[in-house]
Amino acid sequence: MELTKRPRRLRGSETLRKMVRETRMDKSSLIYPMFVTEGENVQEEIPSMEGQYRYSIDRMPWKLERLERAGVSAVMLFGIPGHKDSVGSGAYDPDGIVQRALREAKKRFPDIYYVTDVCMCEYTSHGHCGVICDHDVDNDETLKLLAKTALSHVEAGADMVAPSDMMDGRVAAIREILDKNGYIKTPIMSYAVKYASAFYGPFRDAAASAPAFGDRKTYQMDFHNRREAMKEALLDVEEGADILMVKPAMSYLDIVSQVAQATNVPIATYSVSGEYAMVKAAAKMGWIDEERIISEMAVANYRAGAQIYITYFAEELAALMDEGRIG
Ligand code: PBG
Image (cartoon, rainbow, N blue to C red; front, side, top):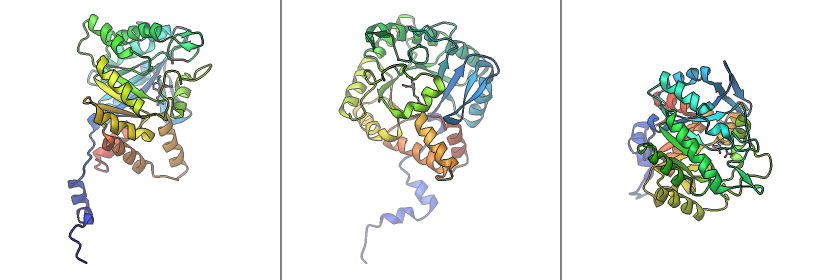
């Protein structure tokens, strides 16, 4: 055979394969999503997310310490309030669950970078991501509350805010209130391209935030659409988003790739609760190799164009990177 081009040549040894690798991972790109709840001495496992817990503020250090030791430097906080009402007042209460958790965590773990999820659904009695008017979420009324929520997070110490509600104009509204209050340096990571997805099922379990009526399809995106993702991404960049997120991750890597090419801001992907639950369940059955699967899933996100990877497997991935088993 006179074959001059032999792609297998570069696959001949682990050293060579590593040398020519196109995608490399680094722990500094990981963000760990974490649930904080009211009460004391609470560390409740989330039934559909084995290995993930709701922590009361006094128990957060257990996980924060582990993350720090593993080299995961950023977390994203989600609050589960003791009380929900129709206007989600717990979301923007200066003494709300996230605000108190932030103050405490910043004091004890000042080197961790704190991102907060800005949304109403964990705080509203009806479970929707905003205030309701005529059986639908009222966009413009909700913007005021989201802006207030973001400001209260930053005042409590958040390093970055991440609005996940999918209201039109929220990035601009949040940028405006932060700037007015002098927080010109605080970045916004927008859940710019967020699909209405069944992959959020276990999260809604975790946060008891499933909508009491209807669904989220009047604000979250229809997963049949790709070009609409560009519309959302470009709008958010125009409104001042510093980082764009695509969510879910695994089934949406075509979108990640296209958003990465269409914009010049960093891209984050969120491997959501349903992705986590599927891996855990199949691994428990002995049907897949959990470590290899989570590595492959992570690499695929970076390969598609992500710079930031938000994942419940952050600690595990960091350990695998340390051991040189992925990278
Ligand atoms: C809040 C929010 C959700 C998730 C992140 N922020 C739930 C939803 O939109 O229903 C999902 C995260 C996950 O599934 O891991 N709006």
